[in-house]
Image 1: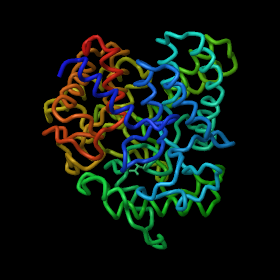
Image 2: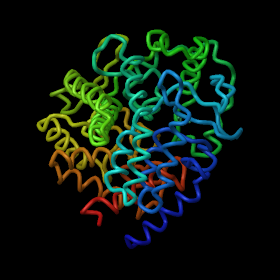
Image 3: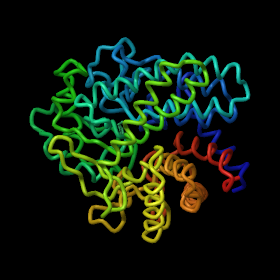
Length: 426
Ligand code: DGY
């Protein structure tokens, strides 16, 4: 496939999944607007339709809660092909949303779109309106998800990380009960191969947490401490830190001095605190199980995605080395779990498969740190996956088998972004 053909296919995916003011990740499996999918999709749109890129992020931020939280799904229209729908979440919003959040990548996306905008007037106007909202979301994280002021935020539901069924939280997740879960019927397994999806046992725990938070009226001043699941994920924190840094830079440029200063502080504190998650033995960052105060010795991509934040140079170099070591264990980087580890599963969602958005963010961070060999290898592998298997949700890192949903928005967006911005890809 030529570069032009690849971009043409990718644009077709985006336009097929475009619902006017927001994009669905893929028809059927995910029929609503997802938070980080949307922000990353905007990067793809920005190469051929800047106003549409801004609309994507504006629609997302229009559903921000009063406390600053930006929900992980916005249920713009009814669709009974997805579970759990609005009736399970019961958040009481006029346009229904879930009550949890997702990796805050919008700050990064806004800066990137503005930096290369052709319509600079429009971009400055849009960014000025969006920054206070994104900043309020970032502040919400440190208030609601780091009540002890450690500098690192916790997720309270696996769906918040995006890495729903990662091996990282197998042990912590066992502490989430399954009794009193209302009977339910999964819908995801009607759209995607059940072997590629989380297990029924995991779904019961996902829903137990939703019911628990709902019983607390989605009051974010109570949810963190009440959740039996509190994980500090290095990848998640890295995205937050990078977005704070990008908001700081943009705000300074746009004369929004208070936002700039507060964002810079949050990023600096976060970077210093990330050191507590570093493992010399594993050569990467690790998750922390906040409920028991222990690092989780699990070699997942969450600790490698940390390269997306402005981490110290020696840490970035070690992560680049870790990536190149993983390259010897699989055909396509970056497996979401180390293929040499016992719980690796090449097909099952976040327990092994490659995800292009994680690849993109990791490569971006490594490139910024001067680790170009690892970064280029990651981008090359993304394009090889697309060539071989099309725009899938995720891929087997050994066989390139396309997994999960097909015709997937963020995979297409990442290809447009990489082909337009990476020297190697061009
Ligand atoms: C799902 O439904 O699989 C999602 O990952 C939840 O956000």
